[in-house]
Image (tube, rainbow, N blue to C red; front, side, top):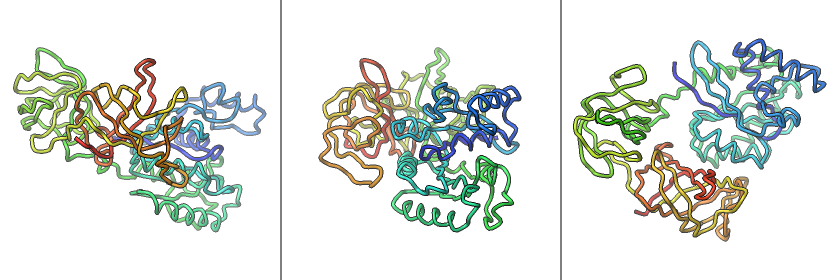
Length: 411
């Protein structure tokens, strides 16, 4: 079975954690002791019902405040597919957590409260999902039970979001009316909304096609670990398909060789593709180190030290300003870098570009030029999210301070 990674997002109290709890509960993916613990916690809070949101809100502060702060990961499976869920917080001060959760997602679920309609944070998270090139977007109009399952309310939200989405680069957009609290259209079709002729949310998650989302054309294999003396190199395939006998090129040397064999966790495999973790055995002895890249001789990534990138700044300690020095981690290579220029700060609500901005604060997004001390082997983020993405690290504290997406190169 393949794995679908999806993230939930949306404004505060739109029901993200309740939706995930409902998915876990109705798909029978929780243990009895987990359910008993949630029932006790719900009773202790004075709730008149079992609050399924507590299945994901694991931090004490989250349970006491009834909100999500950290990104919570949950796992479940159906007979058709395995799932990894990232439950991201809705508060604006935790936008960086949403970026973290959605950065590896195949699909994002934007929840909208049927009573409130499209809010600022709904637009913000939808924009961030498209900025991160999440291939599939589902707008789940939640709490339909509180508007008496009214079709006109749902269609009004659909029309408003569709008009907003026209400004964004969304490849696949789906709308589903649900009630996470009562389970309407979550796992099974709802009898309360006969006017809705689409699938339930879980049916959509089981059947959405994700195989073609991954780049199977451009072979990219960042070397993570060198296994000597067997001429074997371990790592995760970032793009393309690799097979024994294929001719490949090593970067930065430019030397070519062939693949003698490929080993997976359970032994030799006939081919490897993203996102498989494998060991390549090469026919020739080449000086290869961690951070190097293996690609096709006639389809190589760009070799660049000057990068144009969009970054989301995640540090509350200090702002991003031109001239600051950082570490950049790109695939398996870490190098020193310097922020050469800040071109503009982007207002994610209006999409306005503020070219007069002198820096980026916590959760702010902007376009920068980055000068890297060592050459990186990169692709545009739109073409390959793995070789087009990077993180910035504080040299002193080693905290991750930004996530970046490469949009161009100058050299």
